[in-house]
Length: 119
Ligand SMILES: [Zn+2]
Image (cartoon, protein in one colour):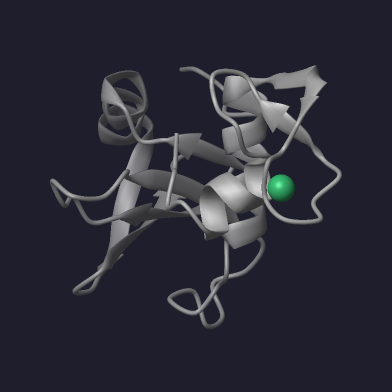
């Protein structure tokens, strides 16, 4: 059993494998599935698979309004953490003073919100 210590993950093969083994499916809607960890009982939300979208697995603090939880900030943080920041280059978005992400000319906020980059 592998502990998931972060609040959000890209739902890639290794994570999907962990979900299959360590989690129970407790709800299923058009866009999301709700999971509970078998041992620590934490609640997590998985995006339904879509070939056009990057799929995320996010930890929720509560089951209340679970379909409405806005994980945008966590997704942006994950994008930043995954790519890393190039401190020597600024984002080229107008008036933005943040450093750009490695391999991109945008910071994580403009990459995510303006360019639709998820990963
Ligand atoms: Zn920017």
